[in-house]
Image (cartoon, rainbow, N blue to C red; front, side, top):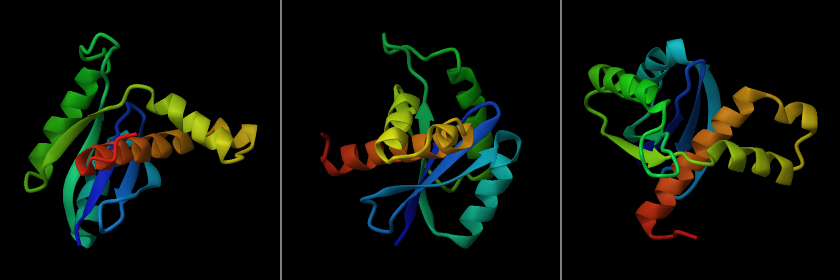
Length: 141
């Protein structure tokens, strides 16, 4: 079955997560330098059947796009240009970094390891993807 890729795009690093084949669970994969993300996704999609990209979209508390949204929109244009056959869905990414830090603490990760921004980015990508999967299946908590 096809999988779904979750993406937490940032100016320096981009976190990547992947769904299981049934589209129930999201797992963090890795963090990629943002300058290389399109090449990474081209390579990944050449090896795996991907049905959808879910990209975290930065929104303010008043539901307007945040300052960082323009960078995500530029990334979305590149993504659609280079991988036009794979649809893209946007997912609200508010609080994902906070939730990622909380899950690292709850998982017993040492303080020094929690400072690794790359780990936060890929966990944030899995939170974005899991949020989408839960909403799609109706399992919203």
